Image 1 (cartoon, helix red, strand yellow):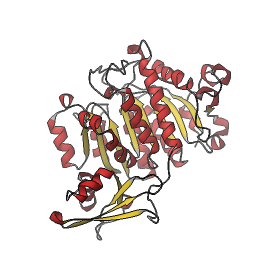
Image 2 (cartoon, helix red, strand yellow):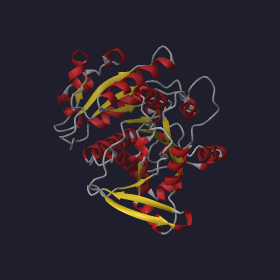
Image 3 (cartoon, helix red, strand yellow):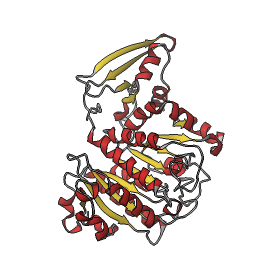
Image 4 (cartoon, helix red, strand yellow):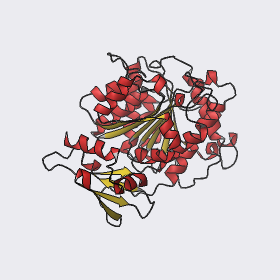
Length: 391
């Protein structure tokens, strides 16, 4: 499929290598050529695509300037990753309707994931996550979605998808390929308790901002299990990211945001990512654009350091630990990767259940989960996965 029908090529402002310093991202970036679209994506690891669609936003803003700002700051940075091939595909302009834009993003994501290229969506509002999800429907692939967001976007559902209710549409959509949804960094004063209770009933994960800030390493196994990461820049506090519509005094800081993106890059399983809701109009000093560029840089750093040790086909060579939890009459089996030192836990699979979620038999966990099990406590993430598999 030719992607060029959905994309507008970048201007010379970005594509002329001499415009950027030696060894920078801009000087070493590859650009999509529609005439050679089959070979153009060969060996590409990450492909950037700007999206200028904000009609689903609570407060629309100038998406065009926002995407340009991010590129300008990212292209200035030095490229330390000679083994990672990056390509900028250009921009998806807003279609005649919002659904047209969703369709374009979905087809682009579908084509890239098919070719084992990670699509990195830059700009636009967070409801574009729904478009990325629909790409996996076409691929008939069960997915885990992680959002970083100050709210849980399960608002009033109606016929129109928007950034305050797109999670409802993900959950309700048929056929359904959503295995797990995790909400990270939500802030309680922006979130109805009923939504948190609903997340629990659905066996989905929700992590408050305070929990993340005090346990940032626990983000890693959640992202290691994700197929899609959707990051709403409103989750970052205003002192670190003034270019947001929420402008909250509380939220993630710049360092924490970069850690989240690096963990995402390290995940062998993660295959789509998006950064949303950056407003250039509110970013006079371009501090937010600089932070977003640094977050992207750390994501690429993570991809560069992937260990390819996700236990898809075999667990041969992994260090195996058995932990008996007497109170629950359970024997949990943990695995530790000799390559990365990361941990997984086995979830029993009922014999009379189909194979739709078979790849979730061994799920990422943390060393702390293993320690809790040794103390006789069954890890919460294990219970949630088990309930999904037996229902």
